[in-house]
Image (cartoon, each protein chain N blue to C red):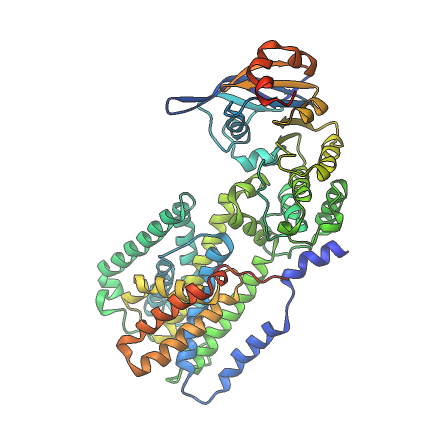
Amino acid sequence: MSAVLETLGLGKRFGGIVATDNVSFRLERGARHALIGPNGAGKTTFVNLLTGVLPPSSGRVLLAGEDITRLKPEARVRRGLVRTFQINQLFADLTPLETLSIAVDERLGQGADWRRRVGAHADVPREVAAVAERFGLSDVLDARTDTLPYGKQRLLEIAVAFACAPQVLLLDEPAAGVPESERRGILEAIAALPSEVAVLLIEHDMDLVFHFATRISVLVDGALFAEGDPATIAADPKVRAVYLGEGGHG
Amino acid sequence: MSANASLVRRARWRWPEALVWVIAFGLLFLPPGKHLLLNEIAILALFALSLDLILGYAGIISLGHAAFFGLGAYAAGLMCKHVTPDPLAGLVVATLLAAMMGLLTSLLVLRGSDLTRLMVTLGVALVLHEIANALSRWTGGADGLQGMVVGPLLGRFDFDLYGRTAYAYSLTALFILFLAARRIVHSLFGLSLMAIRRNRLRAAALGVPVNRRLVAVYALSAAYAGAAGALLAQTTAYVSLEVLEFGRSADVLLALIIGGAGWLYGGLAGAVIFKVLQDTLSAGAPQFWMFWMGLFLVVLALVGRDRLFRLVRR
């Protein structure tokens, strides 16, 4: 197995606080991996280091063997490291069609084209339509994003990331806040992601984690605390003590 | 393809738009008297359009947009005096110089909050103002740049005392640059700007190179402001330090906010309202017109707040 995303001794300090402590982490090609940890364990900081929103204090990030530690967020996206956001960060007054188009335009290197009108390329709407179909958004492509049911907005969040053609997809609490009735659609969409895309799921919801992941890493106080397959993690008394016991999800 | 059709919907021409331009060009045939005012309106409209490109489409707020306006005005003035009296050559050179200045100073507005940008843009304009003041050998300093003899437009149309040629010239420049701006904001580039203005972090997460796009639109906006400055210099055959003053940056921001940022016509509407108000109010009491303007602004802000960042929908 080869790692598509790897961190080597990654660390981040904010003044005297160590938010990420010497994390060496591997995400295998096509993995279904979950990252869990109690509140304040440093999951968000870790994701920000991976995506380039924050510069690390120490260590390196490798994507498919290439050092991307110094690359800007958008450059990482173009190389296939894409994330979704925990709280919706969608463009409220744009339509899903426009939002998806932006992602596809940039991927095809057409985002700087100021001469041709939006919609003048036939390939963009075609790709957008295909992505929308996969995530069940075809019927709402022309609605304003903020008028969509929350479940659809969460699906759009994942669809937009998918439209960037990820090698690695970081899903940050994809089902958070979604009503039970709409949850199924999201779980199905995640389960149906193509197997060649490596998925790192950052999640609190233990049902979702154990349902989805074939490998689990536990982050505590900024450091990797434990890692293994779901059965090992679930049986680990130390993990139960710091995490599973607290959450009460079982 | 239906997806395609709905993507172009924002870019579609609507009949009121055509009407606006028919009226604007129709005003050329008014009897002499109002063309000087109309010329000023067209120039302010172009200036406000330039500010709309960064404020309304990229979310960059500026209190020093006069820096580019003034640079364009002086460039056109000096071109006329020392190089060629041809107005079009001056307009092109002024526009290009302002664009280069925009490119240089764009690096200063990429980072930081709105407050930082207010300070930085204000500072750049102040610096240019003092440079123009200090270089009095070239700019005439506080006396202004005098002795411009602007050649006939296209070698045929002289700039007359009543301002009809001036208005035709400024309006045509405004129209052409407006069409270009309209095309640009409805392009793929424009769509990525819309994403940046709404949420930078999110735009970057979609793979949009945020800084490069902001640099590009800032330089474009500076070019437009420079063109507006050049038009003023050429149609009045005079440049004073006033083109770089804070008041000019403030006026254009007022005009744009009155008309509404983010839909291109805001600058045009704002310029008409601003200039007409100025003209009517100051006819009664020239020194007090700003009182009424201030009152109008307070009412507008309290009553029509949601219009400040209005976008044309559907």
